[in-house]
Image (cartoon, rainbow, N blue to C red; front, side, top):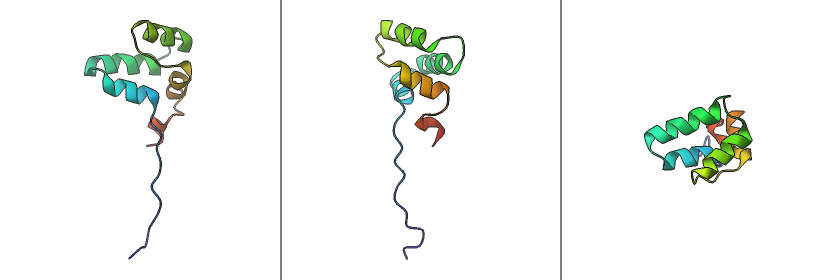
Length: 74
């Protein structure tokens, strides 16, 4: 009856993924392309997003770009 019983895996939300989910489909696509691409430096992208009212620090951008956030562990 209890074969295979395992605790649930806790997945911490990625700030970039959460932010993209709050945006329109087009804006989310632009955000993800900017974060995942190499055209933007991390700090410059963070500042550009802040200038547009989107609060995200450089660490989540770096982590998502380098595929070390929870998005790539799902």
